[in-house]
Image: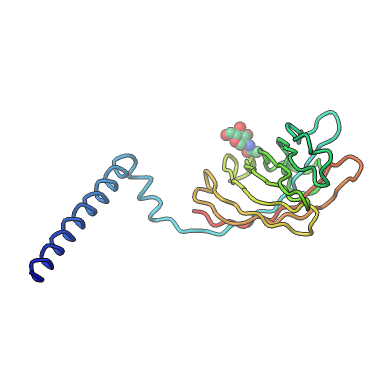
Length: 195
Ligand SMILES: *[C@@H]1O[C@H](CO)[C@@H](O)[C@H](O)[C@H]1NC(C)=O
């Protein structure tokens, strides 16, 4: 009895294993047939760590703002943190802190006030690079930005082009903030692993 049970278990296990292996094999062959060169290319590639440094120009005032309020809640004006405010941005990224400095890309996406007690922005941004070897490649950042703190850290959750498979983090530090206009220049240091 015990022996036949063991035998049956073994048989079931072998059957499951072969089904599993067949499944893995078919998935691999499907992927292979879609683009073998691309997959083999990744296998031979070495992961690298890159550091990017740029300045982010958050222009909310003047005739040509690059960050515009697109939504808010009825309570946003009463909230000390502007809770519920949503801004759409296409902010310029430059090499140096001056607005006339060389353009290296744009930060496109959304930031929104997501904390009722302290200023805490939900940042959902794509850094679209437009200069040098990174021209055409992008990084995606998703994180919490306590904008009044000294240095804020936000995760880099992915990328495209030279930044495929990217993951890492961005450190943001306010370079200048004009209290009257609300315009800000923020220094970014981004560290990413990618292929
Ligand atoms: C970046 O790439 C685009 C599209 O290929 C090209 O038109 C543009 O001139 C490039 N920019 C720089 C600064 O190389």
